[in-house]
Image (tube, rainbow, N blue to C red; front, top):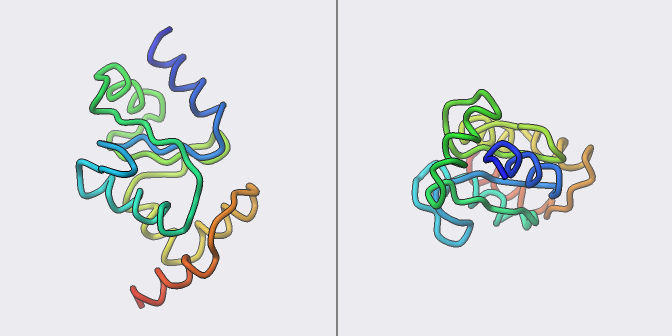
Length: 119
């Protein structure tokens, strides 16, 4: 299976997927840590894909999304963004709206706590 096929299968097979450096329990870069931290704190169930474990996936996800950086978040098969975009969406409430629209479960109180802590 090619990297592109593997990526497509993963994204289509799971509601929320985070391509990151490291894992959700042991991120290996600050940007991946920030996005995983937001998802973990909000109680979102997601699949983490460690791009450091497979160079084909590491480059393949950049080609797949036409986005040059990692992490990359996908919700219901759609590319949402990287660290800066996810941070902005979290603080503005847009991430909550996206999860609500797509039927993704999360802790609304935790999302509000993130915004309060960053106000």
